Amino acid sequence: MRIALFCPFTQGPTRGNITSVQRIARHLQLSGSQIDLIALDAPDRSLCLQRLLASPPALLHGFHAFHAGPVTRSMAQTLGAPYLITLTGSDLFDPALRDHPETLLALNDAAAIICFDSLVAKLAAQTFPRVAGKLVVIPQGVEPFPDSAGVERNGNSFDILLPAALRPVKGVDYAITQLTPLAAERPELQLRIAGGSLDATYTAAIERQAAGLPWVKLLGEIPHQEMGALYATADLVLNSSHFEGGMANALLEAMAMAKPVLARDVPGNRSLIHHGRTGWLYHDGSDLRNQTRQLMDNPALRDTVARQARQHVLTQYSPQLEADLLTRLYHSLLPASTCTETK
Image (cartoon, rainbow, N blue to C red; front, side, top):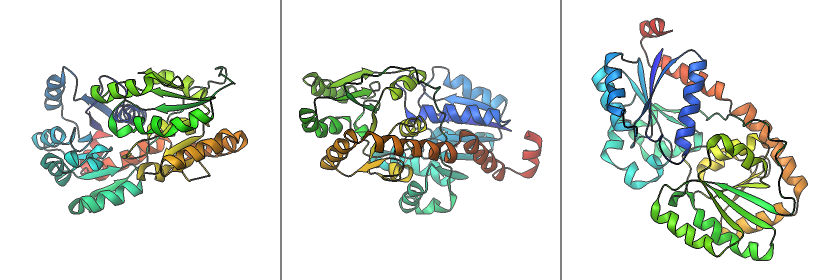
């Protein structure tokens, strides 16, 4: 079976969208599907679309209702093939993108709409009631990084890692502001922010904010294959996003490496983290500081919960299972004759 995956962002700083699409493409191929990965931000985008016309896939799958939905819909109509849309975040939570006519058209005509978790699917059903019957929940998979047991860490500091590309939705400024009083109280606290710039104005504001704070380190863009070493040296992995469209890849990766995670209490994080059992959720700045302080003082608790989290994500969020569920969904949307021909 040939499937075309439409990814809106493949150039520049790493985003969760890129990580998800690349993971899904790999495991669909391992499951026997032929994959055309269409990078919508690539210079040869037009050439890639022309190739689809010459050798049509059985089905098209767009990742993001606004950024990928319109071109996926257009190509599907041209080819006479069904298409799916995966909601990835801002297409549900950003009003400007969520309510755009092109978003609504892409969702209305899709054969199915995938959400990464049930809480996001519930919100999507309330937001887009006309397409509620098309919603399907397929949990994200996670690919653990290679063992980084030999990586040395600074035993005199408490290192908090915040993996986030610099854009307003990630709430990096909020994390710095809210942790500043705790850093004054606990000089061993270090905050490392790993991510490239996706918003020049926001990045400049973060650089100004961090300039006078020696405990804050902006690491810039880190190649994804090198993130394992950063997770390995972290005492705590932080999420400060204002919203998550599903299960944040960074949290899944940290949990798979048995690293304790502390995340803002928003639907995408709430569906992944069972508070006190696989990680912790915070409600506001005071809660963030209090929980961080408690975790700094209780390494045994951090280790116990982190081990539970690792077991949880490795059993529940397998990339092979993700690919299997997608393959079953794809087959269910195609005529039986097409499925037989494309196996």
